[in-house]
Image (cartoon, rainbow, N blue to C red; front, side, top):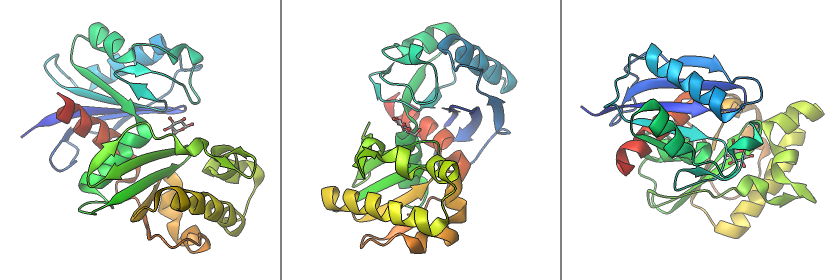
Length: 248
Ligand code: BGC
């Protein structure tokens, strides 16, 4: 039985658990800490260290971490809702050295999307799946016949003259007090644009608001089938651990 630890770093919270990689089943409780104010790398690292202590993790245990940024070869290249100190930081090496174990860093939407493709709503789907997480920002993952094409960053496409995530994320809906119908009109333009560019076989929508899919999916009018994510809050944790195991 292969077990690994998955950790999901976000702008407001850091979640982690030990899980069975083949099934995504949690083998520990799911621990959540608030993200330290400012989201500085050193503070986040200490928070992750506490989490590993809580999980009684030893240094031979594999750790996968997902993070709201472009991650190239273990270097965090951007930073959404966390400190700009992460930009250009060799985060994977820093965490591995400091925590004295093997650590793999990936983008948060890639982790969630990969988990959906292996164990969730996009399991066994042939062709191109685009997983879109609607939260504070918009995260996207491209999965082609089960292969992840990392760092897609399609939340930053232009929509109505602005960055799409500023117009169509769940945070934008809340900020502007949009009804689900009004939000659905923006999402129709956003998903329509993705459809025009990529001709996907399936969209999977994740992020906390996806639990309310019955309220807004029918307002998104595109030809591509749309499914809600199945792993909800655990998608990032599960995908991080899965990808860490595959890249081990
Ligand atoms: C970031 C992405 C991230 C997404 C969801 C965007 O602002 O650019 O890297 O996946 O937010 O957190």
